[in-house]
Image: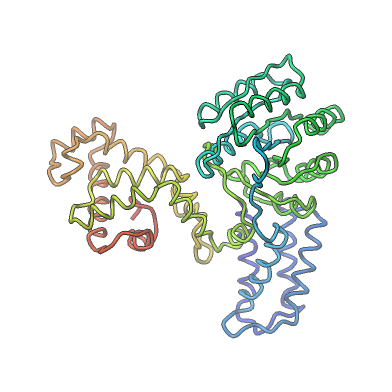
Length: 453
């Protein structure tokens, strides 16, 4: 997400390098590029005008600090304005109410409400240790009810049965009763969507909202919907007491204009953004971190949080203790590292959060087959015996042939994997203590995931 904006903003700032001050003359062309970048990213025209004017006011006449180039000074000004437009401070989900706390999800058809309901349930169960119940009032699409039931089982949430023959308001009534009887902390209500905003739809949603009396009413919006998303958000905001916004499919949107527009126009905070298809791919929305991503500064804080959630301190500590006892970094450890990287969304997802210099494009640092390559490496390790994983030095020519055949790979692939493991093992031996900083700093390439030296 935000690739086009990030590239344009970086180019604009680079053109100011070497200037002593930011003046009306030398930022005129830069502002024109920024304006075009915002319009191409589907940012609403009114938001673009306000954005450009505020940058001009902040930039013109300001003396550039000794330690900054004009380009860096402009980036600082743009960053501050991006943070302001995106909401300033992050807004957490409010669960401070008498349980069951009702969360109502609304939006157009295809926005991803049902999947978001399951993702949100998993997040609340895993991170907040809440007992969550899911219910669908989408009587127009029976498949949605079955889909939510299936997803509820996957994430470990309770599910309240509903049927297409029932009225949505009646479903809400018995879902509330069942949630109270089950002592659920949170009840997430998934509603029906339409291809466009219409009177019948809004009347139904309003009736559901009045009956459910939700503590949080979240508008789920497809980030690739462009200006249509902003228009529908405005209509929903006029009819419902929206408390927040969830952006979906941000992993497939290179523009990011919806994020800038919908927050500024509705005034409602963006609480979460969906960053992938997996049920754990839901991130809290932090305006300052997103602004940094847009400007190519990376998002190391989110990366560290993802590592802590995915890897877990227990596994990291076990590996550290093992190394301190003088035991080597074996192939089972390498397999764990590769699988953890895949669980975090792959190399592209990790690189997106790292501050990369100049015009370096994360996509350029990986070939299209990297994820497939990692899966093949894991398959090769699985093809080994436990003894071979613990003592890689015993793997001779005949063993390599058997391992390659078992994994459906070539002997050269086994050799490459063993070489990568040897590099990692040498690096691990140099580390006197565990810890994420040392691990990242010591990786081949200065921070790239294991196996990509």
